[in-house]
Length: 452
Image 1 (cartoon, one colour):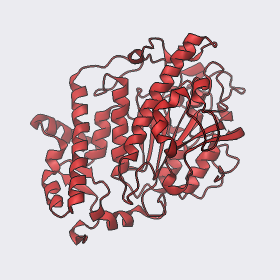
Image 2 (tube, rainbow, N blue to C red):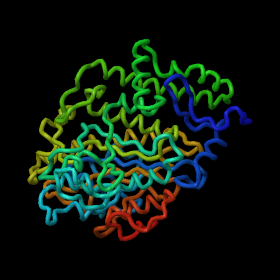
Image 3 (cartoon, rainbow, N blue to C red):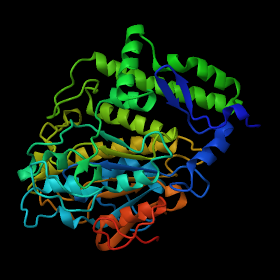
Image 4 (tube, rainbow, N blue to C red):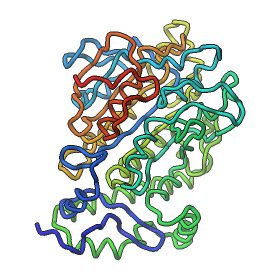
């Protein structure tokens, strides 16, 4: 079809207090190709995305580890939900974070695990304001493309926000409750409240202006889509039939997320998970995770950002999982002392988290990108923990999954056994290089992970 000049440089549907990003569409493909730039793009010009998802307290390694190597491998019991995604991911054995181990600073493995996971650096042991660790991989990537997207990065969590105070064995709470670090002493505060994430993605103006627009919408009982309806109708007339259908599906998805948030806001305070819960947080932990994952997908789909981190729970979290029959706290169980009952319950928790990863990856896989490939194909998704076995607080042979093809740069469908301890920072350096960042070192890296 012909591309109308009236659509040139068009990336948002706008209204008073609203700026709803557009998904990739055939009618806008010249625009999308022109706005992706040279950094962080695939060979076909689509945006390349990075996402990092963190689980706490290690795993039951017996049921985590796959059997077999290369493409001929079988998933462990905990990973059954990923069976249909085997060709879209790599499972790694052998990654390590040496700076998470105790040195002269003694105890505090949970704080170090969180702080080291995306930085590859040793956190300074302090509970004061003189925190120090290192810039995280996501923020190095974000700086490279900060002028190409509405948001340079998106930080999410299912926990409360803590940037000070004393937590694990004398370490500042900032280490344990933050995954992303914009500098060695400045964490990027993650957001747990789905409403605030929604307003950041789809509201226009400053934080104060977005808050004022929300008050107006609530007073008139209108959806954010009501405020961009005229713009949406005008655009709809200029799109081809396939793109009209795609736009309708996309706006329906935005409205469904808005409904879920509104519903959670009417249910009152959620069950206390051990930390202060924000307004608008769904009562159900799974619902909370999936709602935030939905917004990650929309953020990538509309090229609102290309970088996101998600702290599913901070390391040391003692959340219980009564919805799957586990009433004990996760941290307490992680010190299993090889007791069968404890290990079985850890396996259930591992499986629960993997099911949420499968949900996210499936949504990414079924969402079409500007080049006709999927969002998952054009992404690099790291899922893992800074602890392998919670009982021993081990930081070698970390549980790490890499989802997506990196736009064709990765070779998924494999279990990669590295055969020795390899810095996890080597993977991150490889990802930065694929992203277009020509760095030679990151964290404690010894070189970029080889292309095999």
